Image (cartoon, rainbow, N blue to C red):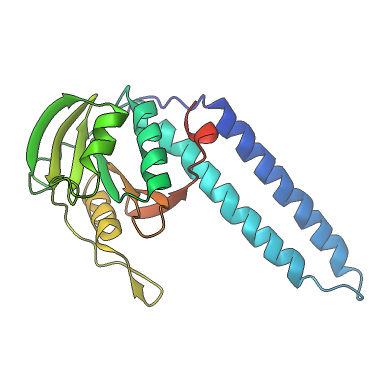
Length: 209
């Protein structure tokens, strides 16, 4: 197993601040319980919001940890998803890790070019014939584009996820790949690993170290 590089100081410091803020709110909540004149519901809503924010920062931190052993271009990937998110250009980016993915995806168009943020962004530009499928990143290269991934049948509540998100989870259920999704409807960014989907922050000062 490769050693993960988790020395991403801005994200780590931001995560510490979020957890400290949650700790303070919990202490306030405990004190509030002793006072019958105050209602705790508002404080719980605040804690819930802070937990969601902390989860997104933590996911961003670990995204870079998971990427760094398998590609030197993780900062280009981070920059690309920031720009794609801002423009609400949908994207599906597969980063191959230990497991070879050739037998798990339907291959698209070979690219075989060094990964750069500008190339990634151009592939997912609306109207580009390659933008609907998934990009496969192998080491420091964009190996191929317009790949088709296996779909998961997972539901969230009573709603089925969109195709990109189901594809991301589907491949992560069958391999150790890390799959990044940018929603074209909302611009929100998530990544799938081990069959689970995690939202991440897209503030460039936090993502790009």
